[in-house]
Length: 482
Image (cartoon, rainbow, N blue to C red):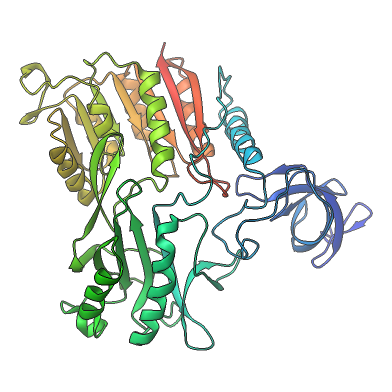
């Protein structure tokens, strides 16, 4: 029998329709959830407790997406956004939500994912660790560039659900020391008349403006992402050498100006090659009591102090004796690897722990060779000799290790671990596994696989807020071998 999806039950269900609903929940991507005639409606920029009229924008048989048309009754958790373009900019989803409620919601997201997807009986999901600051926490921002109708250079985030660029002169979630550069460098680019990249026609030169700051040191690195790969930067951006030197003179915190070459017609922001035009190609940062050097394209947690808090929880939970062998899979530049190495004995003279031509207590695995090179350098500048790093896919490297780890730290991308990595863990059976995740759904999927074998149980989960004012949540799950 053919069903007319425009009519479900006795109610009209069509695009453009105005419906009155009450928001009862929030989705993992930050939208409010309500019901109309027993069918689900997702509405951005709303809070549980809001009663409102929504205009339906996308209509399906059993659910629809809507846009806030009129707020009839405000939730107790609704607050005034700090940013004047919060309702337009796609950088934040939750500035209109009380911060304490954000933390509760993120804890609930983790619980729901582990129960519904993982089917796990949880001993403990801790309250979400708050960010030390709910604003001004981002140590790195990368803005796409555009041109206004008056010919001025724009930089900002895309409007929610569109490719319309919302121009920003400041941003409340980025480190506030970056704000003067954001506004004034756009003006300098406009004066230089450098051609801005058109993503539809794939012409033009300047694609993105990236700013990175060492949260602890205050050092700033400016990087322009350009469409091209010329050996002479002046051919792409005439006058860039003089301008870069002037920027260093104008901004006391700025330590380097770089160009990153990316001529691909994809959504990837950074290309593989970066050249330094003036100053140096990195900022210095301190994390976990150690010194790090970070380049423009280095992956590093954007909320330095929140990441340190989670690192402290990991160390406390592991209660290391100092003689363990730890493998840090997906280690990046050694963000967690190196602080963990501080708690272990230096075994550079212990022949029983030889791996290749060196000896280690902590082993870092990472697919990106550039990150491994930087991790090795960071180990050197901190005089850590009980750590080794290997470049390659974790699924290939982990089975090849010649030692049995006591602890394996997993920190995969949002898609989670490759199934073969989990299978290897069930073969080598480390005493403890720490799984750090930025997506509760894939975390729950992988934990279900590990725990369903009866070889591990989930002892604790600690959510942490690395991204205040957004729906994203980080968490650490602790597994113990049975």
